[in-house]
Length: 230
Image (cartoon, rainbow, N blue to C red; front, top):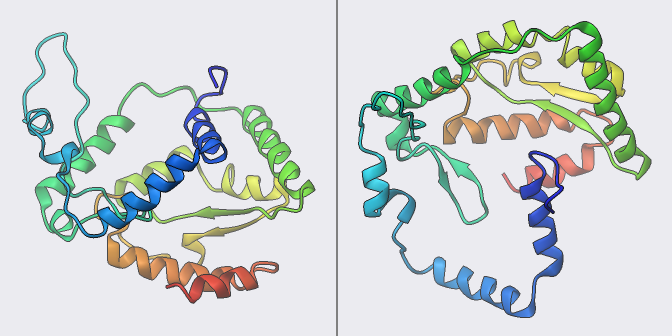
């Protein structure tokens, strides 16, 4: 695991844990599931003393930098690991703007030089090698572009124009794709902080996406099963 490539260490650990779980760990999970559904636990990440201290809006001292923290309510996690923004967060302009500010900060740093057409093509060939491997094992690959809006989307269009990236990844890999801007039922969603849908719109988008998915060959049965869960 020490040699795991960047961004794959955590998934690799999760897969290893899944296969190596002991009987005691499996039993603990089932017991915890019952307890968590009937008891209220203190959210230490937001309500503990340390969490409250970390949330204080302190100005950085010279030579000291602290990454801004996401405000309470931006991300809540349900038992099935579904994440959503709370209604209180969406209705609070100060917290919404705080997250927008974080995105602006992250996007405002030094930028690498634009990739050449050859560099882009080389990356796409690496993606093709991965998709070919999935297909060789009987798998299906569908690329999905979910909604973003506002300055975030404008920045994406400037930095990653569709003709160079999205269109090319489908052409090079020979895979199908669903881009939110290509369908009227998903093209006009507004993300409160430019990059995530609120809870209501996320459900509407998911329902529309599954119906769109059902129009793609080979995905009809999976789509019908998903629709029954919405």
